[in-house]
Length: 361
Image (cartoon, rainbow, N blue to C red; front, side, top):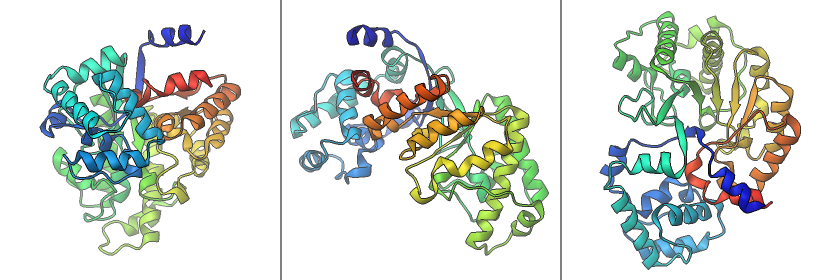
């Protein structure tokens, strides 16, 4: 029965709701090896990778964390995609993997081969955090999410979000002059309108890496007083961001743009999805998509998806953080919502390994 289920799963074409995939030319320029694969797979979160090319040190360090789901998913994906088994975590197998990866990326069609034929992805929603207004990307394979973090840091021209983005850089790129607070709100309006017209399918907040996820309702005059100040206190910056978040959500409602929220595993003290409840209630016409299963607040995500018609759960990343947690949450979501409000993204990292594990549980 399990084999039959897996056979049917392999026939399904999917929409991948969340990726950070660099354009082919960017990846090829880095001359990718096993080191880049591991760096991009979150293995580097739990073990410091050595300098590129030091395979002896790499093998030694990987053996220390061989039980990690991050690493285990990579092992299976490398076997499936490149035909190299690195499960022994030896220098030799790691070198062979690097050779196979380099050879694969010499083919300009490799990225599409993986996305379309191997992973059977119709289209990915791409969050290009390195360039929120990206222009050079594969439009047939990707649709865009507009990352909104930088807009909450527009209180002065020196402030930037955790990715180093500033709204004033985007304003300059688009030829928009921002001198006053009214200009700034007009600029946000214009960017959201342009994004909608340009084909962006949703907004994306990764603000859990920047700040607490509770956004109070703040009056416009209070935010206006902060705008343009050279020295801004932490409290002032937070209150300015609170106002801007509510402003953006009001526009998202008007433009029918869903909003994806990173929840869990960032600034852990403030990243619980429960902090967003006031937004769910304040903006009932906005579809909120809670990423990463809210890990470690998994049951909270299931309860929120059950309670609020405008809240959806996305398990992206969770199955490579903890397969057992993903299985548990998936069961809870099916039991509470019937499975109709569940999304599963970032297929490339773990479809080849994690889904069979879930089916066995």
